[in-house]
Amino acid sequence: MSQLYSSMKPTPVLKDELDIVVIPTIRNLDFLEMWRPFFEQYHLIIVKDGDPSRTINIPTGFDYELYNRNDINRILGKEINALEQHIKNLLSPSTPHFFNTLYDPYSDGADFVRGYPFSMREGAITAVSHGLWLNVPDYDAPTQLVKPLERNSRKVYLSIQLPILYVDAVMTIPKGTLFPMCGMNLAFDRELIGPAMYFGLMGDGQLIGRYDDMWAGWCVKVICDHMGWGVKTGLPYIWHSKASNPFVNLRKEYNGIFWQEEAIPFFQSVTLPKECDSVQQCYMELAKLVKEKLGKVDPYFIKLADGMVTWIEAWEELNAPKGTETNAPNAKDEKVTE
Image (cartoon, rainbow, N blue to C red; front, side, top):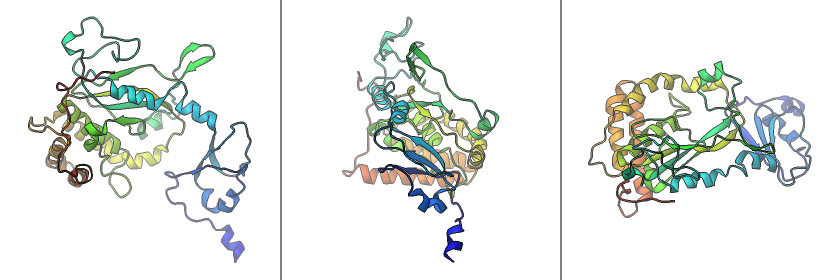
């Protein structure tokens, strides 16, 4: 009976969606043999602690990626300090109202080009810093299927020995322009735009997936445009090494691929009332418009709009104990400098 039990493998749950992270603090991973019936069918991410030159023994038969301190330095980067770059982006102004062709004029080695109005060089408050990916691109399922081997491997070499693995550019997304926001390399000013960072009613049990960050990005950009704030994109770049399964992604994205053709024109056409002078008010107005306009596309959007209202109610309950809304400064009311 014990032999029969040991040979049985449980039905894998979330097989293509679940990674198991293992951080061994001992010299080898022989203990994985005891967990083989449960772990063998999943992808393991093994993070080796301590000396990167030390060898650890990993039992055969597992699907795994192995990382050590050298990999962490490469991915997070001593050349690329992602956290520092996000902070720089958020603490320096944006230029949403007039495009500067020399990228971010507030970064080192750049400035405003000839013809840029002096009256607008003070810039606007930056609410969001949107970083990008190197190596495996952030593609939707159809693009993954037609470009399975494509990689973003562009490099800038400062010397033969020092390849810098990113494209050195930050820019402000112009006012009135939407963008596809990826939530995996993102920083934002919680005091400013936090109430709008609701990643939608999506995922398991819902009719749509892999659009939660997109939805948040569309809402955030419309509100930032209304409030006069900026959104930056570009640096920092993060090394992305594992491509997700395009067939699994297609099942999640299927409705979204069609619905975005309705949702994006909706967001492009939204004009928020002047009376909306807080993010919460803007978001509640968006929720009302979503229910009114996109509810005709599919009843799912009515449910999503209700979720948006619930989110704001919860935000105000947890973040405004004195009963005050988060009235954020208008770009014209406050000067932000590095």
